[in-house]
Structures are given as C-alpha cells and as structure tokens.
Length: 266
Ligand code: ADP
Image 1 (cartoon, protein in one colour):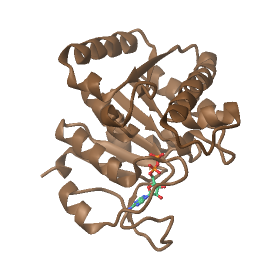
Image 2: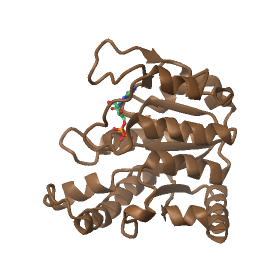
Image 3: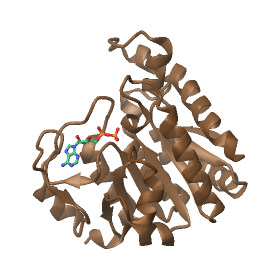
Image 4: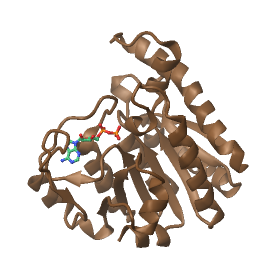
C-alpha cells in the first residue's frame, strides 16, 4: 500500500516533526537532515516534486542560545523561535547544497489561510518555486502567532499546505511507526493500525496518549490532518522519520507505517 501510494504520487508534501529533527541532546540532528536531503534529492531526480513542512525552530533556538529553557513567557518563546528558525534553515540549506538544490523559506500564520488573496499568492509562490526545482520549506510564523491566531501545530499546517498546493500525498514523519490502539510509549503491548479504513470509527477505537518531549499536537492533530487531507482527496501516511533511510524504505516497502487512504472518509 505505502509503496504504491508513493509510486503514484508526483507532488509529495512531507512534514517533519520536532522529535525527528532533534537528537537526544535536543540539538538539530544534522545526520538526519543530510540523510533526508540525499533521499529527497533522489526522489526529485526521479521526477517527483517536494514541499517540506519543518518543525524544530524552538529546539534549534534552545540549542543555539543554550538558555531560556524554562522561560514560559510567550515573548521569550517567540524570540527563541526567531533565533532557531535561522539555524534551522541554515541546517536545511547545508543539507541540500551538496545535491545542487536550493531551498526557500515560507512562514505562514492561520490568517494567511483565511484570506483569499494571500492564499492565492502563497499558492502561486509555491508553484513557482517547485516548478523551478527549489524546495519550499514551510513553518508557522511564530513571531506573529500569538494564541488567538495560531495554527498551533505543524500537522494542521502540513495538511493545509498540502491542500493549498494540491499535493498528491501527505507524509507525516514523527518519532512513532504509525497509529496504535493506545500510546506505545506508555503501553508496550499497543497494537499498530496499519491502514485506517474509517477515520470516524478509528477515533472511537483507539486511545490518544500524550505527546513526547518537543511534540505539540500528538496523535490527535495527526488524525485531524488526515481528515483534512483525505477530504480533499489527498491520502496520508504516518511513519517514523528517524528510521534508517526512512523515505526510501517506505517506498521500497521495507518500513511500515499507517496509511489513511482517501476511502477512509465515509
Ligand atoms: P511530532 O513532533 O512528530 O509531531 P508528537 O509528540 O506531537 O510528535 O506526536 C507523536 C506522539 O504521539 C508519539 O511519540 C506517541 O508517544 C504519542 N501518541 C499518543 N497516543 C498515540 C497513539 N494512539 N498512537 C501513536 N502514538 C501516540
């Protein structure tokens, strides 16, 4: 199922969660970025188009400054993201440069998706960048996003961006191998759900646990993202981004994940 979803998709949007981008010490995981960039480059060479939604600004900010870990004040959090976003994009640029690929930064807020002129501009810019072989890397614009106007989690941002760009496939890379009937971090006997047949029904069949260290949305926002994507005819895959050469392994069928096919919305 996963190999055929990837094989049949030309426009792929991949969201990478904070925990996939960070190493154990909470710094940007450069090895992951390099490995991901190599696989992404191969995907592009094979004729596919790629847009990335990248979390990790706060993580990058913390490791760059080495302070403000415990600051709860919103302005400090926003300041951290402002510092970290530069580091994050620098790391992405360094990862893609050896493959002769340029990246572009796109920072969005919830308001941008509610305004038809902004939406059109975003769409046109995305199409132009991708057509020119440049990889757009999207994140929430934390500097201007206070609670009231926040998208709040990058799963939602990824689904909204996938719809905006009319992607063929949405892949969420997390630190988990897919959806389980309960949180596998708390329950070792949790059973994986390999394919979601019915999105509404699955919500009643699984229990939703907490998020991990740097995570924001958890599994609830991933289900919401699937609902949004699938309702626009875009299938979704939830998989572990930190596994060795995860993108290639998924395409080859040697790595498992959870698929949310378009039929899962009944
Ligand atoms: P990310 O930064 O990748 O978006 P999150 O922390 O937001 O990650 O969400 C992933 C986490 O959700 C997993 O690490 C897992 O511990 C937790 N989780 C809670 N309930 C479930 C469930 N039923 N199935 C899978 N993961 C779950």
